[in-house]
Image: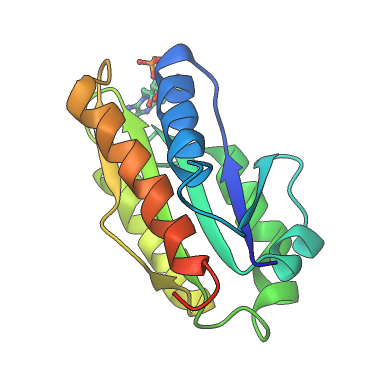
Length: 152
Ligand SMILES: Cc1cc2nc3c(=O)[nH]c(=O)nc-3n(C[C@H](O)[C@H](O)[C@H](O)COP(=O)(O)O)c2cc1C
C-alpha cells in the first residue's frame, strides 16, 4: 500500500489547525488504499522517508527560515535518502507571523536538492488561519494523498 509521510513541526494552536486540516484531507474516506503516517519533525527518521512514497511537510517560519526542527529533519535524511527518493511527490505548508518568504525559499531549495517533485502549490498562512486557509490545507493533504492512490 502506498504510504504518505507527514513531517511537521507544530508548536502552536495556529500550526495545529493547519496540521489537522492537512491530516483530515489526507485521510478523507474518499481516498482509499493510502497509508498516512505522521511524524513530528524531531522524531522522523531516514527509514520513515525511505519507506514512504510521498511527503507532506509543515513548519512555522522562524527567523526568516524553516523551523530548526524541520531543518534538523532535512539534516538527518538528506544524504541517506538522496539516491532513492528522487522524483517522489511532496507538498508543504508554512505558518508565519508576517513573512514566510525565507522559509518557502529554504524548503524549495532543500527539496530541489533531493529531487522531490512538488505535487501542488504550497499553502502559506500568516496570522490566524481563516476558513479558506483551513480549506486550502485540507486540499493540500487530499491532493498529495490522492496522487498516491493505486493507479492515480
Ligand atoms: C523566534 C521566532 C522567530 C520567528 N520568525 C518569524 C519569521 O521570520 N517570519 C514569520 O512570518 N514569523 C516568524 N515567527 C512567528 C512564527 O512563525 C509563529 O509564531 C508560528 O508560526 C506560530 O504561530 P502563532 O504564534 O500565530 O500560533 C517567529 C516566531 C518566533 C518565536
